[in-house]
Length: 191
Image 1: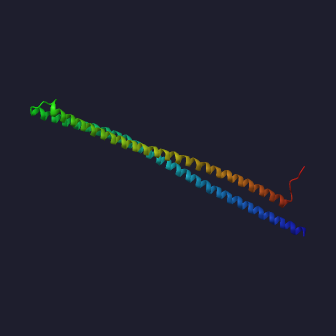
Image 2: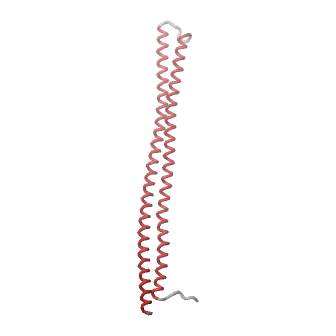
Image 3: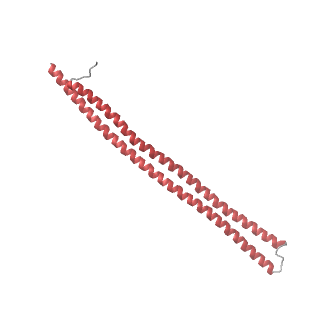
């Protein structure tokens, strides 16, 4: 009877030890899989951050281009108005009218005013487009920062998963130790 109970204890301890080993192996595989997934997510988030930063740079360049185009369009409108005024003055002078007084002067002033309004409108359109591009760049930079933070989080999670595995393996080792004590009949001694 004592032999049967000892054999049953040995078999029970061996089964428990095998279960502990299988659990440790499963924990290792699970931790490795989780680590690989977190590293993949970190790489993906880093790539998204890079793309968002590139978008921000392109949008900033578009803002500079819009500002430049608005300025150049305004200069062109002013030059166009000056050319028209020159033609008006030449026509008035050729007809014998006084060019700096009366209706000829009024026509020149109207043309100058309309030319300046058009120039201002062109400049304003360029500035508005530049502002919109700058807002889009700001949004892209925020997206890049968010993605970079996600990458850091996933990288930390990849490390943390292995810390959890270490705890699991220590627990498994503790169980194996207890099972070994049961198997050998050696228990801790007090005092």
